[in-house]
Length: 358
Image (cartoon, rainbow, N blue to C red; front, side, top):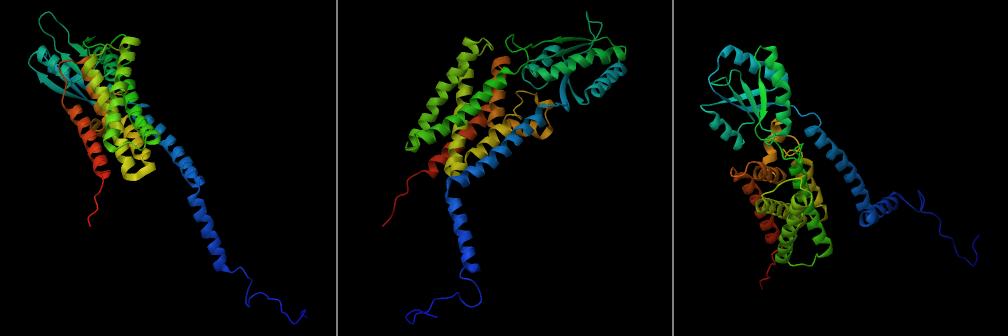
């Protein structure tokens, strides 16, 4: 019975006061609130970092854990005393290495040596001749330490098995401070990573810079960072004797290029710019650069694409500068220039102020 003639409002016929529509609305508002909170970005980052960790380990393991030769360009010079013995030796080497020796014939040893300096071949098989009763294999550790090691270990064993005594000589040994041939890879890796880390710091701490100023400061830390890397590695530690000006220029170009690549992606996709930058430069670029494992030992796809990416171009240019002075190639510089100019152009065009027309 009501009090004073009033009636209490009961639940609506057919259900409670909180119907399916209100529950759905509550769920949607909770999701919207979560999407707008920092917890959403943090959860996404947790998943992305976990995935990046697995991909990082997987990419390096795939490229470096079990390097396998596939095609090893090898120069052949001199007149063989026996075509049969040479054929047996080559077949034995291919079986021992699990790879094919791509034989390139040269009329003289000097021509074959020039091919090594130009990095067209990794070794020279010199047939017997005047004053040399037995064949000799010349390897070049500077061309690829891992390839030279495989050839050095396999050749005497295969030669003995085929009744062809063969000696191995290293005509381009590595520098004393770089016995495993990894210093150039680490130097280039430092330039690659610090290049885009510097760009991230500019974005976070100096985000109000004008586009031209941001490019200028990227070039500034590239020049200073490259000088710091080269001076510490050469003058400070003595790990490598660098052609200083050339090495400095290569490192500066690497730092600037990777910095501008991140800046370009930041302009295109915002805060997730690190994902494609990390993928291109670290997950794909560094394992395929040929710095830690020579390209004949890399999986064939990596060996082909690595030279077209900034890390591979940096390693190739630095490697030639340090060990094959006077035989520098234009290709790695063109690769770095193409990436740097494209990234800079995209960044400047995307940030160009738009004038309103009335």
